[in-house]
Image (cartoon, rainbow, N blue to C red; front, side, top):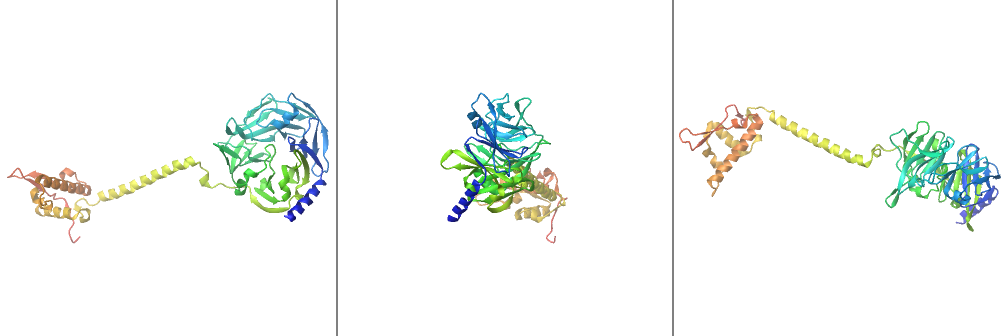
Length: 453
């Protein structure tokens, strides 16, 4: 513990050597890539800029022209550097746009507070500002909007791709040369927030979304701890006593540990992450903060490792859960049809055997003995077969019913094997002398398997 206190004290002393300014809790901070300078606004009369590598802040006077109080504008807007000479202050839910241009801050839109994209990301592109996602009117959105300076209104961007990111708010994001890259975010599900683990890129030239893969598990696990800037590309992020540095071109992120990070608030990176502008809390005054600019290399105390930002998605995760239900039903149907086909083919083979010869294995012992007896005599009185069904106390009607059912089953089996019409098998006729008696005839074209066979 004492070791960390000594390190923290040394780092704190080192910060004093770097230029600092004091700001309030509603101060607006960003980095202007076109001018290569940090920007801070906290007062209605002046703002500050700082060149990376310099040890001093430069104060600039400006004039505010607006009907809203300057304080309310600072509270409800987020600053975006849209080009070398212009800063937009955009309503956090999309809508109102104030522009700082030629040292004058005034409202330039014909819109209104949309209240539709709270928690949406805000970024500059092609001399204007765009927003994606957010929360409004009781649902999370995946709407993509852009402010058109000539029309002074907001318009929705319609992508050319069929697949787009799911609704989300507060994702991490990076802005490249011709690409927007979003990572994770939250999606309110009933009364709970679920953290997403996917990442997407948007090509500004093709106007297409591409799903890149799944975020590294450590990013997802600690996503709720990340200190996100929704109006600035998240090149460097903090959680607890760790800083995350993203290297998008190489699909890597680096993790650094330093107890000094615990006291940091908002963090903004310069080009290539060489310098960081960060805010330190004042423990004696909750409404006052100190802003520093310092080389990032001086803050990288302990490197904990490097990891991939995203990994390719498993093919099994490319389909929605609903699709697996249909896939399961389809596979079950195919399996059923396959079993039906196998059973049908087995039955066809059974039916395609020799038509004239009956095999012993296809019949029961009693059936075979009865058929052998009928074949031996050629024809027999039906009453002669009663011995196979007679039991003590059995009525004549029951005996007759059993005999008829038994002979009917034999006919069906022979018909299946020989493919002869069932009415032509074991034909019955009346006795020539006693018409009350019936005779059963064996078919001469049907053979029985011999014992030798």
